[in-house]
Structure formats: structure tokens, C-alpha cells
Image 1 (cartoon, rainbow, N blue to C red):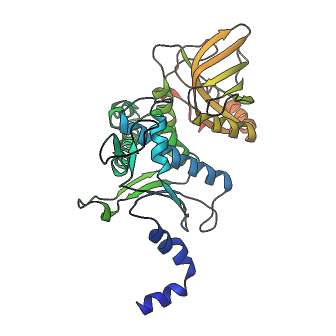
Image 2 (tube, rainbow, N blue to C red):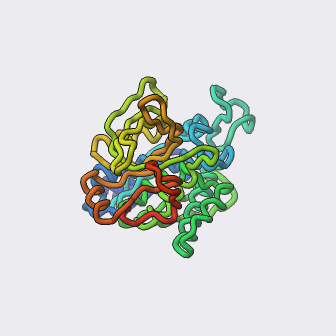
Image 3 (cartoon, rainbow, N blue to C red):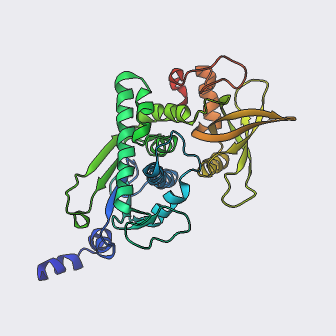
Length: 350
């Protein structure tokens, strides 16, 4: 013990990074979200770091929503329950090497199934933290398997088949944020053996930058409302408006393709997507968005809309488009063309 204490006293970095966090954090399951970074050990470029943290949060939220029931596209459903689960999770320090975001999820936490109701009696109207964390892992696993199926077959059928196991628009969006423009990424889950007598095997899921293609295509497909005329367009964000805190918000998109409709107002289905619209506006990024197209007076609107992804700086996107031809993606060309299958998307937009 004396030798161990001496070694710790001489290595304050190991104490701060690995030992002290585990002493102050009670029994907890550990999620590690890793993204390859070309920056020096333990560092990452600022925007990628922000995106990784946001994507880690979205992964936990999407899996927690699935715990209550599977959906292709949750929109705002199950959001309060997912937020209560997230309130129980702690974020740890990043590890050196490739950039890693660590989340500690307490397995014994009781998460109320009803809004405004405190977790009182054990096992009464509450979900156990570990059960929700297991749902997160099942949803990530199902999505990773669908990505692997796409690699082998070029088909998105695995995403449709996996909805019952947790695949959703929200989960594909979360993993898209981790993989897009990366040199590799992975998610590792370690279960705390002190919380349960049953031994659980750790989980590990690997992704590559190329996986952004099937994830983005699946996001478009899962967001589709088959009862409406859904369109997908790409444009520049030119205005932002959020009248009420907690509301999804509205933004304007100026189309980057030729056609009769030049500008569209976008009313989002989920407030999570508003952050991506803000980033696209601040950094002048081309944004791909999907929704139900309607005309009101002189204004064109996309209702119940979802942000699919950003496609790089507007100028660079325009250059790629000029070289590569049409890049409208989704169920229907906004500007009057024939319906376009998601599987036919050109690689130019990656």
C-alpha cells in the first residue's frame, strides 16, 4: 500500500484522470465515445470536439427514447423521459490519444416513467438506470449491424428491419455525427460488476468515415412520413427564429439548386435539430433538410422538418455540385422532378 501511494503521489495525472473519478463516482456503467483525431495526444479540433459531445448525448437520448417503445422517428415523443435519464449521467474527462468522451451512467438510479412524478417506492413506476443503458446498447448494436449489412449488400433494408430493435432517425443522426468526416470512431461500454451479480460482457462498436453515407440515407428514409408529400432539399441557412424557449424553432433556407422555389421556411419537428441549423448559419455550411412541403401565400414551408446533415462549406459544396451534377436527395425533388430513391445519391455530397 505504501508503495502504491508513493507511485500515485508521483503521478498526479493518473490520479486526476483515472483514480479520483472512479472514487467519487458511485457504481456506474461507462460509455466511451472515441473519435480519431490528427491533433496531438489528448486534443481535438474544437468543432469536432463539440460535435462528438453532442453526438454522444444524442446517442444516449435516442436509446433512452427507445426504452419506452420503438419508433422510426420519435420527434418529441419520449423526450422528457430521455432527459430524466440524461440528468443521472455524469461526463468524465477525456482520455489521451484519440479523443474520447466518457459518460458514467448509474445502474441503480430510478428514473420516473411519468413526468413530474418523483421516484418513490422501489420498482414502482420507475425504470432502472441499467435497463435504460442496455436499451441504448441494443439500439447502437442494431444500427451498427444495419451499417454492416449495407457494406455487404448496398441495401438499407437492415435499417427498416431494425426499427423494432432500436434503430431510429434519432439514432442514425447521433451516429452520423460521430462518423462523418472522421478517420474512424467507436463506442465502448463497460458494465460495472459491482451493480449486479450477473456478469455482463462489455460492448464495442466500430465505425468509419464511409459509414456516414448509409447513415445519412437511412436518416432520410426513417424521417419520411409516407402519408405526406415529403421533400428533401439542400440550401444555405439565411435566418433563424425561436420565439419560445424549448420550442423547436424556425429557420429559412435559400436553395442552392436551380428551380422555381428559391427560399423555404423550415418549421422543425425536434428542437435538437435547431442547434445544427445554428451551426450551419454560423459556419456558412450547406444544410440538407427534409419535411412536408406546403405553400402559404407567397411563402413555401417545410413542416415537421428534420435536419439530415451538413455538407461542408457552401462554396465548396457549390464547386462539387458543378463538377458532379445533381445532388438533390430524398423522396422527391423539390423542384418538380421525378421521385429520387435514397440509394441513388451521388457520393459527391459526402
